[in-house]
Amino acid sequence: MASDDEIEKLLREISAQDSQQSAPLQRKDSGSPAQRNESTSGGRIAYATMGAAIMGAGGAVSGLLLPGISMISTGIGAAVGAFVIALVSGPPRWFSR
Image 1 (cartoon, helix red, strand yellow):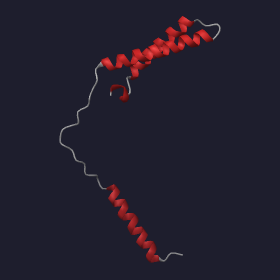
Image 2 (tube, rainbow, N blue to C red):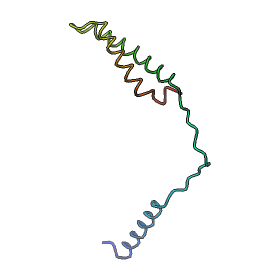
Image 3 (cartoon, rainbow, N blue to C red):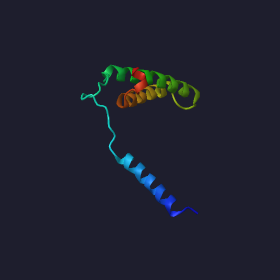
Image 4 (cartoon, rainbow, N blue to C red):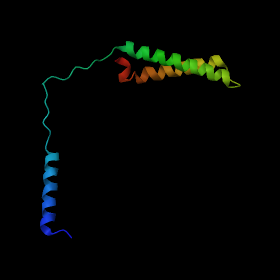
């Protein structure tokens, strides 16, 4: 069993670590905010168009394979849906690199 001295030592170590973590971190700020590359709507529209073309082709293929639904209406529906969702959500960061 641990002696009282060891327990007190452990409690002091824990309180020392807690006080270091609660202290505010020193950050190196240059005073001016970092510049962000805000893309214009060109990247958003290109991403939406690319997504619409890919999903439209996938919808057309699935409409071709599934019985009872039209290939054209499935492709158009998938393309419009993908375009709207991609336009609203915007491109991911890796797309603009």
